[in-house]
Image 1 (cartoon, rainbow, N blue to C red):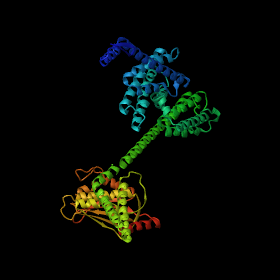
Image 2 (image 1 turned 90 degrees about the vertical axis):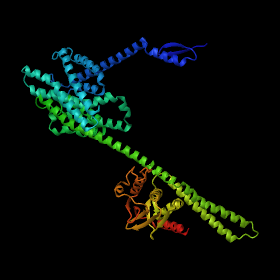
Image 3 (image 1 turned 180 degrees about the vertical axis):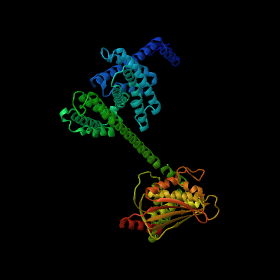
Image 4 (image 1 turned 90 degrees about the horizontal axis):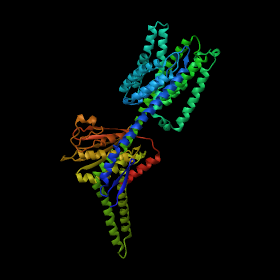
Length: 604
């Protein structure tokens, strides 16, 4: 007996024929739970944690060093502190069970960043990292709980983010050092506390949206950007940096125009309007670093007065610009998503209405398919009889040519009649775009009556057509108007189920002022007054087997033609459905063609 070899995750198992399936499952289970596989999985898991910890520590260390470059002498005075935003971003996009990795990375980076610093010992920096992580973790937890893990999607969620990241966390983070300064009796406690608070708050507010997007979406965000958006982003960056360099690199002697500081505002607005919170956040970061670096080196509009004034003025300027810009970006994004959702819903609704219309048309036609066949069989039978009669006459020695000519005319008329029935049926079955053209309401009524004549006879219902003397022409879709009238007449016939006498449906057309009114009257029991206001609503039906879509679709079709449809009970018995279509000015040729078609129909 030949055996087969099965390899599963590096293990080899011999399988006998006939036992392959069961043994494969056993081998796979054993391989999965083998000590070597578990060790490999554990090593890979530990390696992944270590890589993430080191990556976060390196990123935090680099941002901390970049922040040191923005210090105003003396040591602690800086405009904004971005490393806190990195911690906030990491916690916002990660599950709470994995936060411990960022805690370890923060401790490593905090100690390394201040290693060998004569002002702040590494131990003090390590203790500060504990308090910083605890405060940021509490703020991130609250944001995730209150904003459904998306703090930049809506205005309420942005308010929660600003309150937590821009107020509570900075206050809690800067309070201990301020308290220590106060206890040691150092001067200038409150100005220093305000500058420390604003530095942390600005770093959180400006840096968190930018870093969160970069860490959460990464390369996928850049791949989703279109060529047009990429070119626009590069142009925006070039313009923003050019204006920023012009404004913030001016020498101290050219500070005669204080309003020059607002020159970057239009480009910041451009970033917010076109790229929402992400664009606004990165643009603000660029302006913050550019303005701070030049202010440190004695350039730009924020170099007057003392060093403390430099920091505070720049912080107030950035805060005054950042808050409204971020909220505006959120509003733009929210409106843009709502608009896109509305467009999708409208498109889905259009497709749905185009399909519940086609389905309604088919449902109506299914009720009188037999009568259509009967209507076609009549002219076909007449054609056959006339053809047989003409054949017999042609066998005579002297065929009566005049009589044969009359028979041929009858055959032609019967053929045209059958063709007209088929044409009407194909038009109702067709599913296509709305085609507006000059049409005669009278011709539409004649077409529908011709289709329903046999069905009315089968039901024992008399169809009456009352036409006015004027031939109104409207611009509309022939098939849609036929569908509306067809649905109203079918409903009228359905309303007279169980009515023993006066089983009659009247169709009347009347031109008044600048519109034509078509009414369909039945002799049924009428409509309960409380149901009339809801009769044209979707999914509302007075029939047990009805879908409640026929009248709703009819109203939609009539409204698309600029008309209206309504119903009322007759004074004695029954209901009257009416719809009106506005008259349109059409050329004389179209009107003459409609009159010719109307006269030809009457001659039949």
